[in-house]
Amino acid sequence: MNEQVERVARSRRTLVSGLGGAGLAAGLLTASRNAEALGGGTAISGFFDVTKSPYNAVGDGVTDAQPGIQAAINAAQANGGGIVWIPPGVYKLASGLIITSQVIVEGAGWTTPQPDNVGSPNNNTGNGTWFSISSTAFTPIRIKGFGVGLRDVAFIHQQATSTGSGWTPVDYPFTIEINYGDTALQNIFLRNATRGILIRGSQTEPGNSAGRITLKHIWGQAIITGVQVDNVLDAMKIDDVHFWPFWSYSPAVLAYQLANACCGFIFKRCDNPHLSNILISSYNIGFYFSSSPASTIGGITSRFLMSNCGVDESARGIYIDGAGTSGQVSNYYFVGSNAYDGIEVNAANVILQCSNIRCSVSQNNAVRVYGAGSVVTVENIIVEFWNQSGIGFPAFEVGPSANLYLGHSTVYLTNSGPLTGGAGTLVSDN
Image 1 (cartoon, one colour):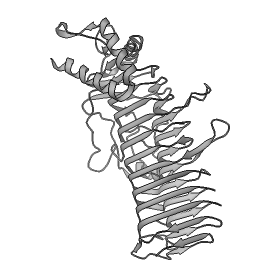
Image 2 (cartoon, rainbow, N blue to C red):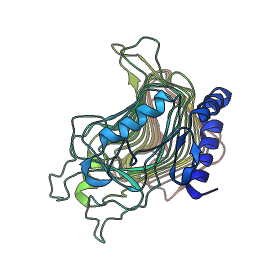
Image 3 (cartoon, rainbow, N blue to C red):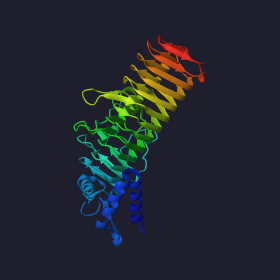
């Protein structure tokens, strides 16, 4: 079996096991009776190389590759599914790609170009499969069907590389938008996207919420927003995400990310999301749980599960202002930069359970709970270097009609101010 044939076979096995189950497997087996020929005379169904005739996409970073790639996607969809293969290269998109039914769009992976030794940004690409975007007029990839996979690709946006004091990113829309469920993104590099991934059930077609979505191995420096979620009404899983200054750690760029409403994650209406193994660095907010306006979808995030997550060099770690949000956090750390709080609740009737926590270096509190009827429990927490402002913030602050419960293992290191305070109910087992 030659290398190309083995790659297709491996991709088919992954597709069948990860996205479509028995039905998709049956579709691929049926499609195999209508095989197309590849090099060497080997007949394989459902494999569409975007650089081959009749698609003829060119990965030179200059030629518009969208027509060829979209044609290959359309052919795979008409085939009942398949692998759209994008070989190594830099593929310029002058308009967006739309995927409306089960296909796998697969690249050759990517390497990570680094900033120079003083953190100056550049718009270089590494090896592997890259999409290049220089227009703000479209969403580069929109997924509007079930059973879609996108994997092993990288994105480069043309951002300003001169980092004067007034630096701002180009106002690009989200790089990838998912409007339907049963979708998987894997091994995606968002080198310098202004906004990364938007997961939002259709707002124009009643009943078409998103759900059962998997994000795995997502890396990059999405400057304003890494991932935003809304109208997702079935459990989604997000694992192994690393948002860090991969493109630039220039002081001007990081100052923009810290001073503006830049977030690693934004959750609005979302049911039962599972978040694990996530590291976020250099944002105004690491994890933001808000609410969806009633005029569009309405609702908040309920029963989220977060484990093995960290927020570094950011102003806020976990921030909740969606009334009624509920969730659990375990194995979480926060290290601030001009920071407000490691965990902050600022809404009514929030229920949050936390365990195995470390909060370090905050201007204000380690944990702050405001909002009538909100209940936060914390077990096994270490706090240090709070009240860096010197104003007198306690490590734990609870507002009127709010409730905070601290377990036995509450440890204060490097006492920086009052331990507890506020007008609400604070119960400590220490």
